[in-house]
Image (cartoon, rainbow, N blue to C red):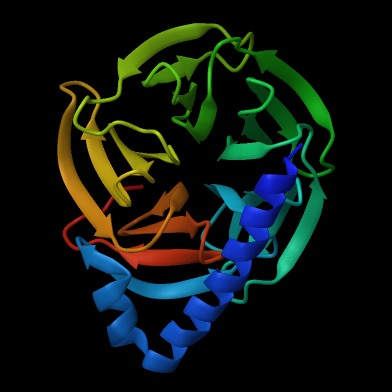
Length: 254
């Protein structure tokens, strides 16, 4: 559960975020692209989040996103074009963070309990859970076979067998990109998108060689989780209470 201090911080950030977002809207799209993104992408749309501390994101299809909020402890299914909440249910843990969708189930990480939960995406009930002591689990992704998770404490991305929770692979996060905030994760083919709240950036990594292939540099933002589709990223921004759709020039994936 959040401490009293955490509650105060979230409420202050919520108020400041609303003021900042209203200010950006008044100034228009050109100002947003110039001042929200320093380089590497263009904001083409935004969704106001239903909760006050947006964390996890997962794409279901081109019409809907799954999204969780650490403050309300809820998981939402959101219509992309309208921002309308189509479904909502309680997260199984006290501090939901990462989300992944495998076509049938949702996978939700909780950094307070060091646990990854499998959830029925239709009814919202818990199917099973895997606990990983001495970790700090954040962003999740699904590659068609394994669940990937960012472990900030040990600065690695781990590949998990969804049947029994066995760790089958580890990828050290490059030392040039230390993750002390955020740690959102998404897959683009054989590459990985990783958000870094410390640097206010989103990087495209090659896990075979550990190289950073591309970087989107944000300003005055805390990027949390990520979802990718074709040539754009969806990014949850904690302090602005928004999900931004960012077009990335020269990039096309799934």
